[in-house]
Image (cartoon, rainbow, N blue to C red; front, side, top):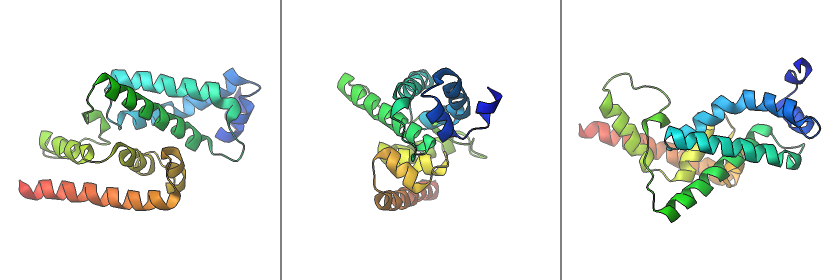
Length: 182
């Protein structure tokens, strides 16, 4: 398995067609932390994120034969995760559940101000549409390019660029407005 570890994600995904367990195990190890953190930042509680995380990787494992050589594995995986999130949100709406922004969405602990800063960030993120929050998180925290994130959330790269600019500006304005009101 040492030779497999040297392969790129894309090569492993293609290899997973013939050696699914070994190749996919390495892909899982490489992406479990970042994918789990992405799901946490979308606002679900940890127990729900565990389920969504398992569902995303299970769907990826089952769909590995459909992985295209020209695709980037990371983009493909996050597209599956975004679809799992959207399916879960639709199911929650049918059940009548509400969505709330949780502290686990924060990337870093606030330096000063404690609870007030957490509340400010929660409020700002809560006012951003889920697909805009997903785009923002994929680009700013998961390291995807705008084009890759756009593909994952179902936008054109041009629309994603404009949406990301506006979302970043909106979050910044909301945080500044709340800070000035203090």
